[in-house]
Amino acid sequence: MPWSIYLALKQLFPPGKRFPAFALVSIIGVAIGVCSLLVVQTVMNGFSQEHRENIQRMYGHEIVRSVDYRPVKNYKPLMEQLRAVPGVAACSPFAEGQVMVKNGNVPALPFVRGIHLELEDKVVPVKKLIIAGSLEELDDDRVILGDRLAHTLGIRALGQKIEVYSPTMVDELKDDQVPLPAELEVCGIFRSGYVPADENTMIVSLRRMQDLYNLGSGVHGIRIRLDDPEKAIELLPEISRALPKGLEALPWMYVNFNFLEAIRFEKSMLFFLMFIITLVASFSIASTLFSAVVKRSREIGILGALGGRPRQILVIFASQGLFVGLIGFVLGCGLTFLIVAFRNNIVEGINKLFGSGEMVAQMYMFREIPVHYNGNDFLIAAIFTLATTTVAGLIPAIWASRKKPAEAMREA
Amino acid sequence: MESVLCAKNLKKSFTTPAGTIEVLRDVNLAVAAGESVSVRGESGAGKTTLLQILGGLDTPDSGELFWNGERITKRGNAFLAKARTKLIGYVFQFFHLVPELTALENVLLAARIAGTPMHQARAQAKELLARVGLAERMTHLPTKLSGGECQRVAIARALINRPPLILADEPTGNLDERTGEAIMQLIIDVCREQNTALLLVTHNLDFAARTDRRLVLRHGVLEEI
Image 1 (cartoon, rainbow over the protein chains, first blue to last red):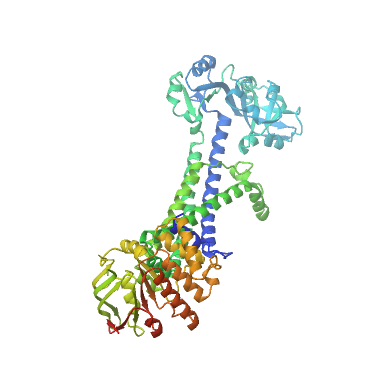
Image 2: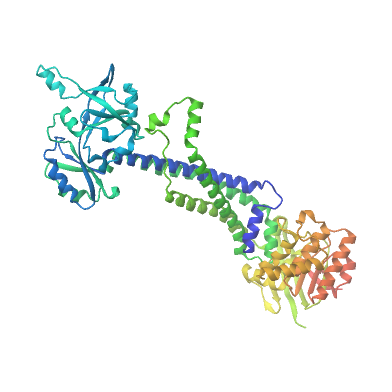
């Protein structure tokens, strides 16, 4: 090990000192800065990732629908054409809309999804979301409810029946007919983890939805799964070419586009805000190192007298900033993993303390705080931290290295 | 005999709020290899400044300085630092050991700065520490050593690179009489053993008397006595 690095380490962690104040305070400062930066970035990534996955889970990767929202007739040949587009993995027709349901006297206005019983699971992972019953049991007289919707309706067990009223029944009333609600048996409960969907969605067969909305053999659109969801925009022209006039394709990124952009923007803003914390920690390192350089003025002179070159003296102090940054970063990463691992307990504790209840579920639509580690965030945090702490050490180091040995000894 | 150190017409002055103080007016000096020279003078006469200029730690206002025949006046800090590791060993009044390093590490530091490989430097440092009577105290920090022991470490540090010249600035000034006597004898003995030239700044007439040549710095000029 070069002597200048060895001496820097010894000065940073003096032997026999159980509490090397400068090193510990500086390292903790950097660690807190790095931890704040990474926890915020990891949680923001989680929000973004979770929303992207939810959108894909609920909408598929691409939707084909008519421009004026009219039913799409004769969709089967169209599906064949779409399947032929390179990059398209599977397609499934769908129909969806609002209905009114009642369980006894308890009403609700959920969103109903009519799905093709064989094809839907090839496009969106419905089976994986079911926590009671199964998709195989779904038929034209049965329904699968979101768990929160089931709770709202007071569904205690599978097999209970609910009444479903569709908007087309209004037309029957106009014709002096008495509309009769469809009576559907609950055969399954799903949980997507996305609160609005779990609170407000029920799944029926496509035929049942066609009946409820008087669609005949038509559908509202076709859901598409791609080999690579990230290529949804790239494949848009190719898919659009396969569509007849009056139909359009919509990539999943365009669903809730503003929301995803808002998260991305928020993440960038928070990065800069949190980076300021690291910058403040770096300034404290610079200030403490300046004091150390002044305090060690005679030592700097002695090192010069022993033959230490200005560059080597520079390395002693600059590397102290680098070490503080390096150890602070590693500690900050550890702290990040710890906080992220116990994030839900921490939020639960905060909720208990301030009585804010199911804040995450209500405000952020997730049952738990989503996180997603991104290697790039760690890399950027490492580069910023090491750069700022090294520069913080470098400024007093340059000052120290430019002193003549005699001058340094006189100043001490 | 060739001079390890040669100074010609050195001048140095300091500007203070009270005016300019001319510390060195016209200093001429040559120290031959293996020769011991003492410099005495009143407090504030400029002895330490002279030693710092001769060791390349400070620059003169004018005059010329030669180390082993090479003119070093107006050379950069990096050159002087490198040259010092080969030519000069320093012993200071207040020892100036690095407080975070043990006795052995303090001696090793000088060798490592000079670029001596670790295994070789370690063996030399241990040998030297044993020579100055600190074989049992090598792993002690300076805070755990007495003044005399610290100065012994400083002497070992000055000698580790086997420089042809030792500059000693009142090396016994901070020690009691008995310890000072022992340290002084040690410096003189070790320098003789290694044929190392010694330039000793001291107030002590007795110590000065043990050197080959005795000088006095008076009114900025060196006079032989």
